[in-house]
Image (cartoon, rainbow, N blue to C red; front, top):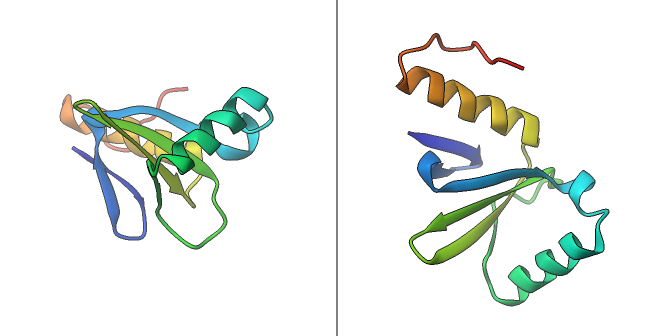
Length: 97
């Protein structure tokens, strides 16, 4: 199943390692340093020119890519859970908290 990150960008859900809120996680110096490192090493893909709200860390084999998305981490998480429930035969739209 694929997770839509914004614009015309989708990623395979099995490649998703983390969905993170950009504002909340960049409070930490360690996270800011990590984001600088991945930008310097050209591992970042900006999905949109809109205000970024989240970032999604993915891994395909030994390659890591980080997608900066204008969609909130909560919305992406709900989409991801809905994909999981649909794949497992659960009802679409039922997101447990």
